[in-house]
Image 1 (cartoon, rainbow, N blue to C red):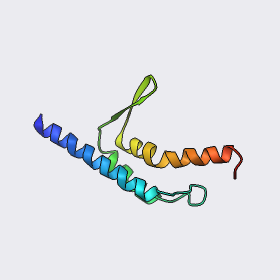
Image 2 (cartoon, rainbow, N blue to C red):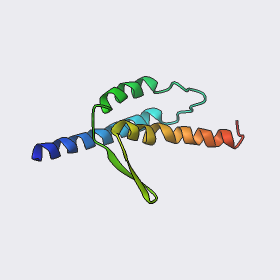
Image 3 (cartoon, helix red, strand yellow):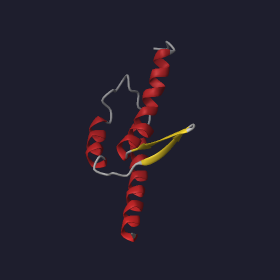
Image 4 (cartoon, one colour):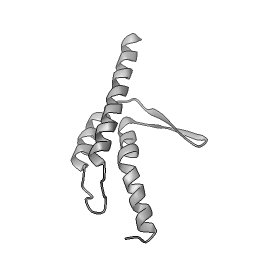
Length: 94
């Protein structure tokens, strides 16, 4: 059991460091101007992270759901830029 806990802690710390690194890589990204930015890095991390079966519990109002590590990376790094861009396009500011 101790080995499992140490392994989980290591994976958690690795994922936190990865999130920080990828947030820096995507900082200032403009999806409409550079749609392929970060694609190769995300493809590489997808292969690595899909091998980790360690979901994260995410609370959204009264509903909770689990995110796998790669899904979390997408939601916390890529999707904020996509959502912002969509809001911008929908509001007619393009």
